[in-house]
Amino acid sequence: MKPSRRGSQLTGGRSIPIIVAGLAGLVGYYGPWVPHRAAGLVVIGLDLAEYVKFLPKVAPGPGAIAREIFYLPLFTVSMGAALLASRRSLPGWLRWGLAVASVPAALAMLPPAWSPAVLRLPEFRLQMMAMGACLLAVPLASLTRYLPNRLVLTLMVTLALAAAIGPAWGFSQALPTIGGLYGHTLHPGWGFWLSMTGFLGVAFFACAEILRSSDGSRPADS
Image 1 (spheres, rainbow, N blue to C red):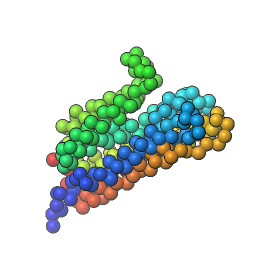
Image 2: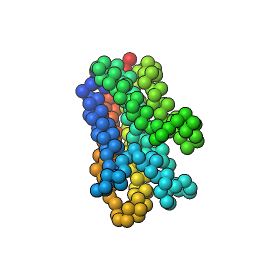
Image 3: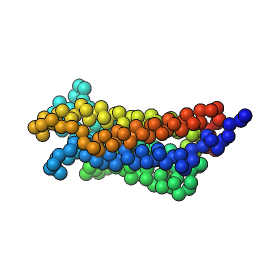
C-alpha cells in the first residue's frame, strides 16, 4: 500500500511540541545560569558570550573557550523558526509568527554597545556571519520551502543538539573560575537546566517526526 503523503507532512499540531520546547530553551537562555542573591552578580546565558572574555584562565589563549558557543541557542532558535516558517503544511498564521520571531532572535546576537566600526572587528566576525545567515533565512523561504521535511528536521536536530551541548560544555569550563571570583562553589542556575532541557526536547521531538516519516514516503513539502 502506498504510504499517505499527509502522514509525512509536518502539520501545525505536530510542530507544537518542537516550538514549545524551543521556547522553553530560549526562556532558560535568558534565565540565570550563574545564580546569586545579589541581582548584579547573576549571569544569564546571553551574557556569558561577553563575560567569559574577562575571566582569568578562560581569556583568549590555548584551550580557551570560544565565546561564540554561547550564541548557539539564539542561532538555533532563529534558524529553526525560519526553517519551520518555510513549511507550507503549517497554518499561515503560524508561519508568519515564526518568521517574525526569527528576526529578534537573530538581532540578539549583536554585541553590546555596537556600532558599524565595532561590527567590522575580527572579534565579532563569526557572530555577525551567523546573524546574517539567520536574517537571510527568512526571505529565502521561497527556496527552502522545497526542502524535504526530513532534511529540515534533521537540520533542526543538529542545531538543537549543538545549542544544548555546546554552551553546557563551555559553561562547565567557566563555572569553577566564576566560583573562584565569587569566593564560593557555584552550581548552575535554573536557566541553565531549562535551556539545555528545552533544546534537547527540540531534538527529541524533531527526531520523533523523522521516525514518523521513515515509512518510505517522500516527505517533501511541495
